[in-house]
Image 1 (tube, rainbow, N blue to C red):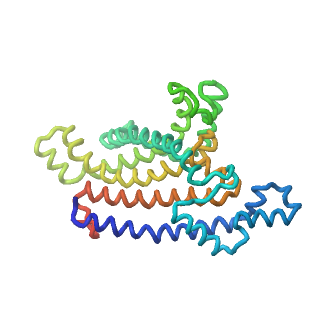
Image 2 (spheres, one colour):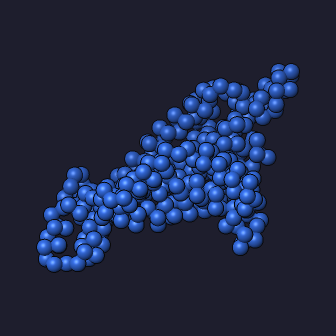
Image 3 (cartoon, rainbow, N blue to C red):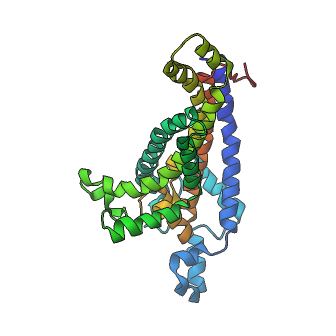
Length: 325
């Protein structure tokens, strides 16, 4: 383990505290500055005829107090591990709601991320080793199309084609948890394809660029001059170093495994964190929105820390003390 790594991890961990505090202030302010009354969203427009009833509901939810008081109370509960109660989800604790939806999102996003890596890494390697060939041009054009296609449009297109016209797959995935184990793949197929396509395009382009940069380095030329075979030069020398930048790229995608895909989960009615956030925004359920947002923000910060640590472990040139060794 590189010297000073534990001290570096400790410093970065302590630095997460003010970052999370700043995130909580910004999100709390933005949510309360958004137009709309959460009480009317909870009780319905017919409740506007009774101002006293609305005022009492606002008092019960703690929304009648000044914003600094509301924030201090919410932050105190957050420090104790209490994310509050979801007023529009049958008064269920927010932590319970997140726990119920967490595994569904991890399954969906994890499979999409793994599929993207399994397809993109070999495609990027082959494309780089055959630069400017017909295969390379096809991969390039396909990658641009994969990044340019709006995933919500692709999701709707697949629903119309595979579900409505052909009847091969279920339109929505609400019942996937109760389906027999051998049938569950049918509920996963369309959302996984929609989420994996941009991953494949992004990872393939990055893998191609990383390989092209590495194969022209001096140590690869020396390996060829020593008489090593093409496969040995490619996989034992070039690929190992080309995969190091992929640590950052994959790390940036990992928070999505926890945060969910809001639009895709809503289109396919997938019971995950993304759909939970979508429903909470529509219902003006402040505790749920804040809970999901803080979970996502914390995941991004922790993953960035883990990526930096992984860089120090896999690349001896990186110094945790600052700069390159």
